[in-house]
Length: 275
Length: 328
Image (tube, rainbow over all chains, first blue to last red; front, side, top):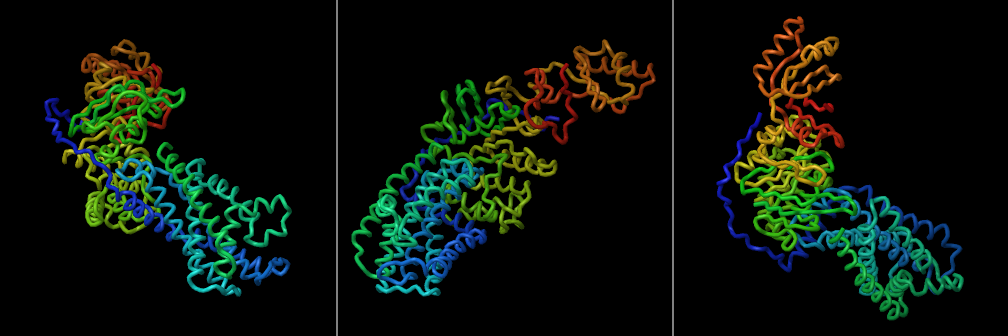
């Protein structure tokens, strides 16, 4: 029954000196690009997810433009021009939560063991995931601008500020992706990741200037709404697309984004390494 | 090529590995045998740099897995029972991705991916998403992915668990080819037949401790006997068991479920002839009757007093005779 005979113990080891390998500095970029490509292929091959991700903000646009919008009074601009900048920010923030779901999906499957057993950059799995989600956010933001334009939204402040507005929103979304990366690595499964992602996002999105002016909120809520990053980002995008003072909100948004990134990127990488 | 010295690993109160030693020369296939929960996967994960040992040292080609994991990673290939491939990518995309992450240039990664696909018979399915693959195809792709880096050491964690007999034979032949090319293999399995077929040497691990090591013949010799095995009609089982008392050199094992009697014997041929005379005098004609070497299942029972499947799924293999494993 034995199909193999033992090799005699005198078998030469055949050992050549192994050169220790050091990952090149470019490894993080090459590997993140490889992983991002893999994730984007995954996103493109699950169109139902992309459809759900875009239907939701479209419904919000229609709901607030045609149902609630008439009852909401905002100072200075038409409601659709107030709403769409808010929707753009809401979209990138919701889009960022998909980082949690995608990563926890990876973590619950054998593929993560494959990645960890390869001589690749440790941060690339996270970098590739957040970059892929950023690319997806670009697509969804452009779609929302198209939908917004169809229901009457217009850029009133010129081309470059409009580009800057999109850039600011995407930057916040990207930095938030690292928060959700950390959440995705911390929770047990994709379903929990979905929930754990949305819980902190709901109060942030709704207690903000995304849909309505915060002036109408009670004082205590206004105090929160005024300083939090989503209000700052929505007001920045609004000012950049519609005109008005930009500097303070822009600086606050950039500070928020960088702070979030600086705190959560190391946390997420640490969690990935030791997870 | 693989050197493990005194490796221990605990998870909370659970001691997964306790002072495990193992040394695998280049070009060898080392079997790592044990039931579910024995600690096999923990050892695999330590060697694959996925876990750090609490104590002891593990080296691949002389490189410590803890101090220089990236070099170790460039030397090893890992394939396992959970096919670690991306369902949404095609087979080819999976292999090119892994090749890139082995630090191959894009062009070479493509070439290696094609080689792997060819080798594992996946050329036709290469451009289909993996979610359309059968379980056996996924497992072959997983093995293929571990090969694109041309690893010196292949770590296989239960590579055929849950596969149908046909696919298992295919996997065995792929593994044999790799060994013929000089790859060193650590083969983890619950299928004792697999070690018999593929491994030069094996260690048996139980509850984190190495309880035996040797060639599969040496391990079988630990049982110290051959076995007379016969199948009877159910009605004749008790009467014949009584009549055969005194034959052999150990306690016969009776399996009522399929009316099997297994009798350990120290003098196989005389005992078999004696048994035949007794059966003949009683006018009993067994459904089957034969002499066999103990399987590694029998060895595990002899070493631990427990059957390998006390805490795991069935360990019977498609080509091995039904092993005797009821408590003696």
